Image (cartoon, rainbow, N blue to C red; front, side, top):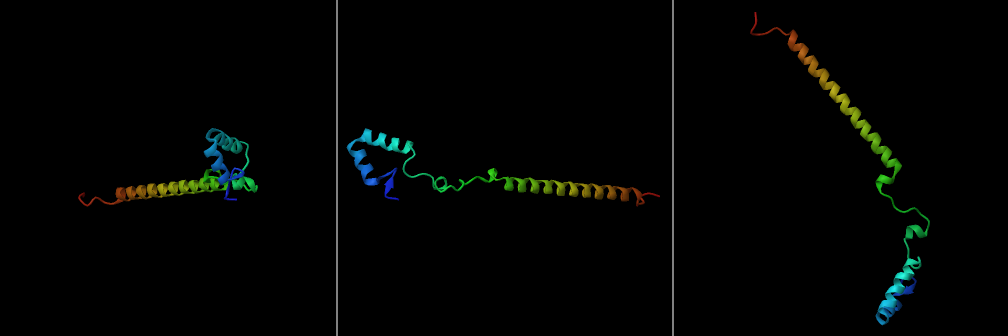
Length: 101
């Protein structure tokens, strides 16, 4: 419940910390260190904790696949450009020189 902090009602913790500052604070920390009270809801109900995208194998696999596809496309475009340049060069060699005989 939201009215409780680490196993005791908020009001009880407030009174303990005001009346016994050192003992109340140490008690608050001690109760929390023993794992009582609220915890991560993902851990409590057994569902996995949220992960970052770099922890997801499917996501990483899709990134690798996409990167490979982009490299392949770049290589194809580069070869096409080289072929076009070579063909243009060949056409220039075989065209008669307009200033020549």
